[in-house]
Picture 1 (cartoon, rainbow over the protein chains, first blue to last red):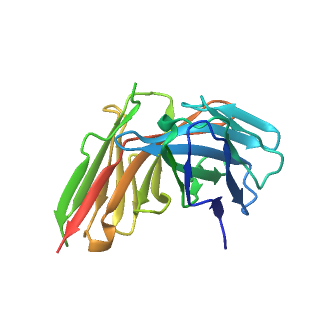
Picture 2 (picture 1 turned 90 degrees about the vertical axis):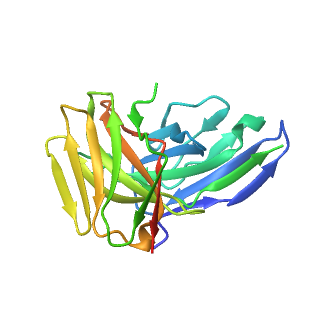
Length: 114
Length: 114
């Protein structure tokens, strides 16, 4: 019963490096999203996808790219890491039907950009 | 502009007593509200939700109350247990036609003492 799996759990990057945070879900959910959690800021939506091939920007999309080639996977790409992207990143999936908005979260990726 | 606000960053309650966590929102388009619980180094987990057409929803020790006129909701935990010590996030959903986006508050850290 994996649910939502995020890799890696921890990552340290140098400014300007690129990397991809992986997210996979096995619940056949159409809707997936990426959030970042910063002290005093709660969880803020970066990008989301309502199905394979469809993505859109959330509240804080700058510096991040996403793609959704399959229902299961929703990777988040940092093209040129900046210290401001130091954060904890959470991937989530849920079925956006009426009354069923419960989001299932992965365990998070703690990213430090130095 | 913080559309979902949790004005108390922390709360300490004795075991067996009631814990009341509060949340205020500003967006009248929110139609569904959720509470998530988060332990350190884990992803948030869904706790309880309420539709905007209701004013109360109960699940075991957890009850959520919604006051639409005041744009206020609260989570009651009775009786509080040490295992309830965690950060609690309030979240609200606004249907945008093609997607259901969740907006989170900044969280309240609950500590249940013996």
